[in-house]
Image 1 (cartoon, rainbow, N blue to C red):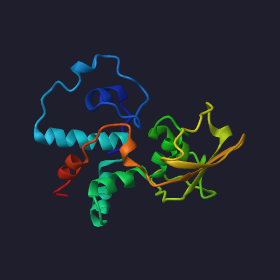
Image 2 (cartoon, rainbow, N blue to C red):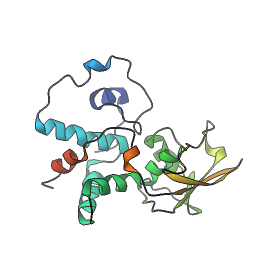
Image 3 (cartoon, rainbow, N blue to C red):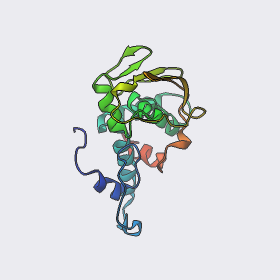
Image 4 (cartoon, one colour):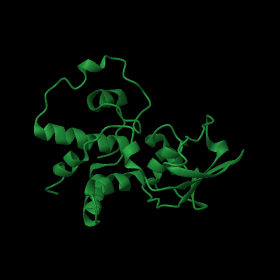
Length: 192
């Protein structure tokens, strides 16, 4: 299945706020959202879809991340979220270089982002702790301010007229910006 290119508002009406997916807001009253009663399978599927749409990963990629998180020691749900947050497109979004993860993916594909002073064009590139991500200010269409997240996500190394350089810290999954029941996602994939 390819990346989703349909109406984003339709998705956030069904799933709720997904900050990495779109910056659009819902105009309708929120009391009509999710008024349909879902089965247990429907609830599991809905939580899984939140992860897929927010991070822009395919079903196959998400299955690989779940399998990789099961192999590591520790809390599988936290490890899964840390793996998704340590992707380059998610890291560029969290640094404030792009308004959404989808926009960050496009910046990476076009070669505007450097990792440890080397150009990387793979949005799923794994950014470990201490990775330096840089981007020229001239590539941004609108001037963005880096988010005030120095102690939480990044350490700002250099911020001058030409280039932004940030150094990654360990992803803090408590500050995702949307609600997710990761146990339901893991239960959904329990047979895979």
